[in-house]
Length: 403
Image (cartoon, rainbow, N blue to C red; front, side):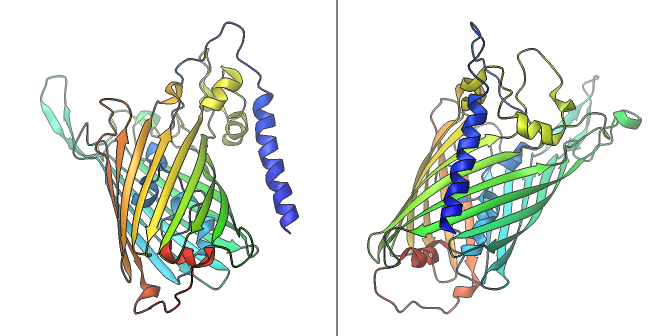
């Protein structure tokens, strides 16, 4: 079984880079320019919880917890508890305004030893906007908002591998409830869309079952779904379809000290705007997914710039206190988001509290002063006390994180 898994991973990675190499370099004399990819409902790409937000936005292969629904729902199959959930709150773009925020509710329920269902709700409030007419008279206040609700199913495919799928409903009301000013297809309305995620997670000890070291790998294809329209179908925008690929190394030095190091790569599976304007929205979703690996006008160099990199570290002391740090990097030509992150966590009997903070590299970044708060609850741990004193194995270290 392991031989086939390794072969599949090698073929997947080889196919990915073969597709990039087929693009070739940019045409002679053509420079790769500032050319970011834009999509509808970008709030779906914001890391909503404090733990992963404090680790540079990694998550494809981190130890599973109640927030796994966003980064990789297949990890739920390896949670240790019966039931857990979390509540997160993020004041967003505080360097610019003070009334934009993201709220996140996520949880899971174990059906049996192999099957777990999960769910989450993300609500993104854009604050209050005062409307003014051409006569400079106030016409009222609107409150644009967006939300996404999803459910997932994950299952162990072996002792080391799991798979998961998620179904998502997305609603985006950018008009804040204000009636459209046009007629027929020109009237602006709230946008609705459906999407799905497909994910896999692999974890294995290093050096035998009694080892204190483990590795993990994960992949999540998210937001693969219909396009969204705000004018009754006259114009349709792509969702932020994304591929997240990552790995994690965990070492439990002793019963008190556990360290994890993670690395993630993300790429939007959406067509790149061409050097000469063409309406890429005419493409189908499937066509956009496949062409996203080969359509950058700058060739291979620009395709590689579309991959963001996240690095994260997490240290647990005595299974109760956590320190986290990370770094996120995006190319200057694709948005230029570059920032360090830091976070702390405190775990009690049935609850945990996490906090994270973003430290931008650039001056005057709109991400400055971004903080996240998360409360996690593991009701399965109520009244539960661990009696073992031996050095924990990688399986036991998952209980440190799982909520």
